[in-house]
Length: 349
Ligand code: MRU
Image (tube, rainbow, N blue to C red):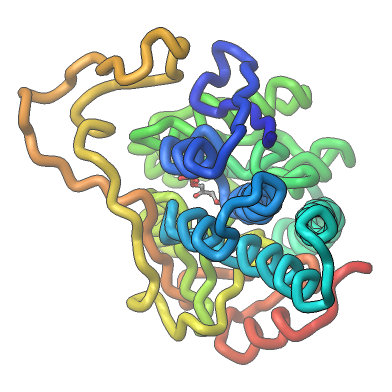
C-alpha cells in the first residue's frame, strides 16, 4: 500500500490517502492529490513496486502510471527505473517476492537520490543568488509549489529559498497564488508558514506591478520538463513571469533535478502540455473538503457551459531563463550545450 498526503485537502486538513492498488494511484495522480515533478517520479516508481507486490501485470501497470499525466518527465523516468529493476530481477531468476523487493528497493533508492539532489540544488542555488543579487536581503518571487511536498527532500526552488532563509539572507518570499488550482496559495504559503519564512501571497495578475515597484530581486521556479535546448515547461503562468522578469531586468532562475531534463525532447514545441478540465477555471474549487463531497462542484464564477482554455503548464524559451540550477551545477547561459553538460555530470552519491 502506498500512503500519500492528499494535497487536494491542504491547507485545511492533513489527510492521508491510502492507495491499495494501481488504479487508485493513477486517480491520485490525475486529481493532483500527489503532484509536482520530482514527487510524481517517486509516485511512479512506488506505483510499479505496488504493482509488483500485488502480482499485477507490471508492464501494463507501468504504462498506466506513466500515462497518468503527460508533461512532467519525472513520472515516466521513475516508472522506467522501477520497471527496469523489476525486469532485471525477473531475468536474474528472482521469484515474485524477490522481484517485488528489488522494485521497491529501486523506488527507495530514487527517493534517497531525490533528497540528496534537493540538498545540492539548495547549495548551488544559494551560491548563484549570491552572485546575481550580491549582499543578501533577497526578495524572491515564486510560482506554484516546489517544496518538501513535491520531493524526497526540501524540494527545488523552495529548497533554495529555505536555505536563504536559514542563512538570514531572505527578506521576503512573494508567493503567486497560482490559478486555477492555487498550488501557491494552498501549498507554498502552507510550507512557508511552517518554516517561519516571511512571505506574502499575491494574485498572479499582481506580479507585474510588484516588478514595476522594484520589489522583486529574483524569480525562482521549478520545472516539469527541460528540453534539450533548455526550453522549460512549468506551471502555467511561469512564462509571463519570465517575460516580466526580462523587461524589468530581474534574474529568472529555474531549479530542478537532472531527472527533469529530457534530452529526448529537442525543444519547447515538442513538450506535450497537459490540458485540464474547463471546470477548474469556471468554478472555484479550493481545497477539497472531504471524501463525502467527492465529485462536488465548486462555486461557479462563469456562466454555465463557458468554454475555458486551461493548460496546466506553459513553456519558457531558454533565452528568457537566466540560469538552470540542478544538483550537478548551474547552466548559464542556458543553451543546448550547457544543459547537456548538466545532464552528463555525475550527481551526488
Ligand atoms: O500541476 P502540478 O501541481 O503538478 O504542477 C507542478 C509544477 O508546475 C511545479 O512547479 C513543478 O512540478 C516543479 S516541482 C519541484
